[in-house]
Length: 273
Image (cartoon, rainbow, N blue to C red):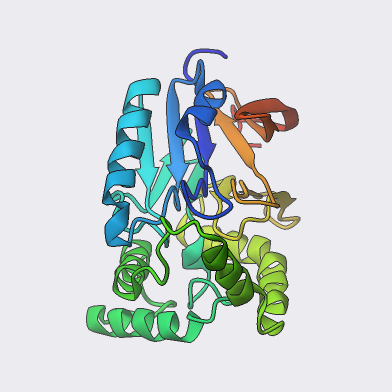
């Protein structure tokens, strides 16, 4: 790997049911990378029992990577004060993606509660989605995520806990329909937020919905990339940013470790195209 490459990952969901179970499994994925950016939901950090896991995550990445940047997501809103990041002279905009929906996760049974909490925080700040600056809008989501808290204990890996999580995900069936709708909406929402708040960006990188993909806005030529998740079954992508190119790769699982696959898309960065 060339010197000066930033690798972006998202949604590790460390030690969550279905997520990454061993940090050491990431070692081959991180070798030779000069900086790692973890774009939200690295773990469920809202639960009191996750404090030791959070410390473990910080120590691991501090040990194996020359530089690590944590961006907060809806499951780890307090992992970092950073809610967005711009790279390559602002051509690359990175944010977790929960900001794209006024209720964070419209497929969730807590969507209405989140919508109310966000509206309450926006009212307190005297802003609306149309009038607020990006900093205040992101902060409003963060406050709401903190106030909602964790609705399950990620350390409980029992069969009954897994069954209850699966039940909460699949029932009622309308949740799956709302999830599919969010997947369809994601690119347009990413493009819309970039146009309004980060018009210099030619690439929007996000996670959150766990559905990896690459889309181009035909009107602006902006590229939206969802890096997916380490949760089964919708694995993920990683994105490498250097001085000259943005490269998208599949994250490949080989037995007990993860690797960066060959490029599945490459975009030159010299002219932001």
